[in-house]
Image (tube, rainbow, N blue to C red; front, side, top):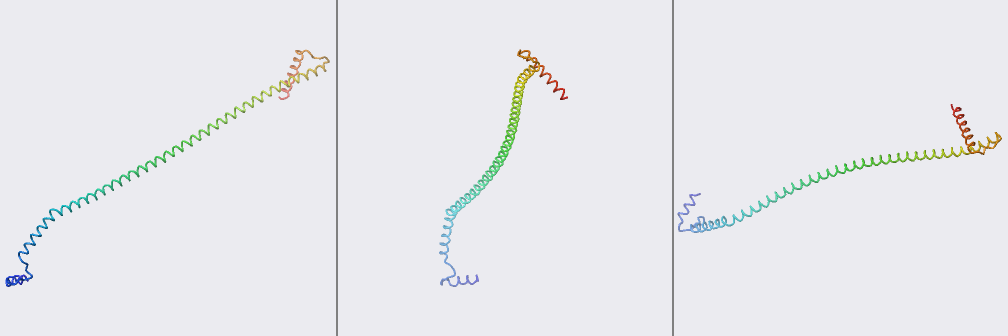
Length: 185
């Protein structure tokens, strides 16, 4: 096939072959192509490379920012979890302190109630003893008066002397106490 093209080119120098290009046309096309390549290499390619570099840098920066944000979010989550754990521990501690304080207050109130009860009981015993003593004194005087009156009737003389009457009453009461003590044994 090459043979045909070469033979056609040599034979028909006078006649133009449409398959073989003209040398001047090829030269102009080659020079135009070289100028176009120079412009593309000198101006267009650096602009594309600059744009690609900026995009790559922006993408890598975005990825780095996203990774940093994710790391920050993870750290914040861990901090939140730690704070939540600390808050729960603090709440448990406060709850236990409140229970202990409540138990202490309850124990104090029980102790105060027991002390108050003992004090009231002691006052009641003292009041009862005081009333008993008052009743004994009152009964002694009534018994003394009755004994003096009865003794005066039995003896046949009036016991108007207070000292004598007091001695008679005391002796009578002492005899009664010894008799009641002897009967109790």
